[in-house]
Image (cartoon, rainbow, N blue to C red; front, side, top):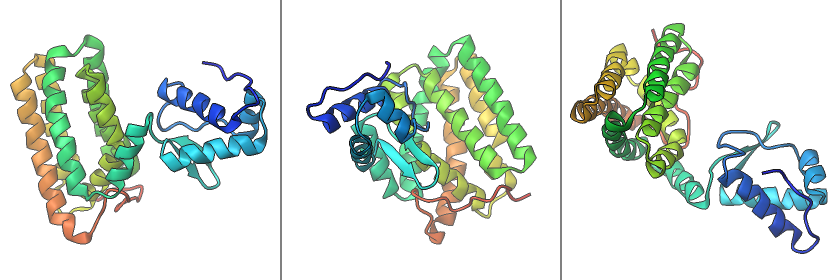
Length: 248
């Protein structure tokens, strides 16, 4: 949906409506950077202050996130998504992880029944990317690959509500992954390569029960690691381990 020139009444509100529509419609996906202020001023045919107020309002609601020196990014697709993000920022890693586990069990079961050949190809490639990034020693790349893998499972369930809910957990999921990587546990618990492979194998076989068991097995391992690390006070709103290299 292209931006259009805006009528001169209730300018801020009208601009907010247009920006919300771009976000809700997916034309500005979550995680992407929105156009800079001068571009918005030109496309909307309004003043700089009007654009600034509209963007500030959406930052306040949680749909957008301003990053100093970098720009403004889409944080959530809806007011509901923004509310979920705000609540998760106050949650403990373990709380967020338990919610994630509940969603992922159902996602894996549905994916085993509903996955398409394209879903399976994407999961296999994502699984290989997890291995590559782990072997590279780049923690940030490994976390990004792992988040992508689990998002693909949710998408393979072909339930839009479930997929959207899981997407809202992405920031909290990243934080819990950094916490697991920082925990003093064997490397097998850190990377869980066999456990993730078992999930994809079960989904490919169309075995919903096996997919659920595989998910529960690797999530239980990670949950136990989080419990061990909980004394460090890691919270879902931060990144307890952000170096570019994981422990060997």
